[in-house]
Image (cartoon, rainbow, N blue to C red; front, top):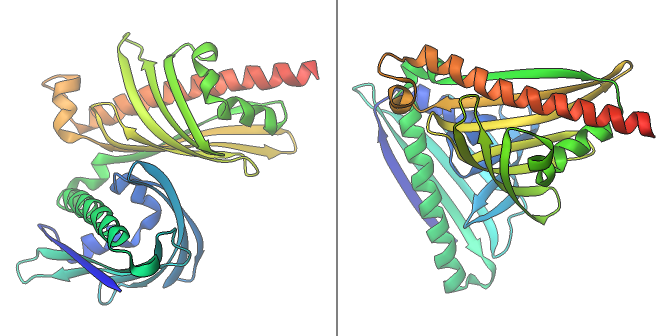
Length: 313
C-alpha cells in the first residue's frame, strides 16, 4: 500500500468545511474534475455513490462507499471496483477545528497498483497530487466565502410540455452534434463520444446581445431513464461552475421536458461583465435569464421536432 497526504488551511469553521465534504452530490459544482455523482444508497451514515470525473484528460467512473462521521468531522471512503492499474483505493477526509475558528482540511489516500509497478505507482501519485491540490483549493475557496454562499450559488429549472413519445424528445437532446443546424443560438459544436453515452463537446453559443460564448462540457447520457447530465469544464466569465440536466418525464397526458441548472457565480467577474454598478443580485438575474432563455428555446425546438416525428409516424 502507498499513502499520500495533502492538507490546506481554511479560514472558515470546520463545520462549514465538513458540510461541503459530506455533500458529495454537489461535488461537480465544488470540484473542477468532478462531472457527476449519483447517490445509490444512504442510511444517514453509510452511502454508495457512482462518480464520474475527468482523470488525466479522460472520463472515468467508479463506485465509492463512504462513511460519514459528523462528530469527528471525518468521511472515510473506498472505491469498490477501481480501474486498473489501481487495485485498491481508500482514504479519509478530515476537517479539524482550530482555536481561532479556522480549520485544517486533510485528504489521505491509501492505494495499491497491479504488480506494484513503479511506473504505475508514480502515475497514480501524480494524478492524486494534481487532483487533491485542485480539490482542496476549491473547497478552501468556497468555504472561505461561506457567509455569501447562498448568494453565489443558484439552482433553477425550466419545463416544457410535449405531446409526443419521450424517446423522440430524448433523441433530439442526445443528438447534440446536429444542434448547429437545429438550434439558432448554437453557432458551432464539436463532439467526441469514444464511450457510448459519454460525450465531450465544445460549443459556441450566441447571446441575446450578439456575443459569442465558448463552453466545453462533459455529458453523461442515461437513455433508459430519459436523462442527460452535464458539467461545463470551460465556462463563460461570469460562472465559476455550471452543471445541468436534461430530463424527459412521461405521464398519462404526455411528456414534461425539464432543463435544470446549478451555478456558482464568479464574484470577481461581476463588475467586469455587467458594469461597475453590478452586484451579485444582478448577476443572479442575468445568469438565470440567459441560461433559462437558451434552455427553454432548446426545449421548444425539441417539442416541435418530437411532435412532428410523432405526426409523421
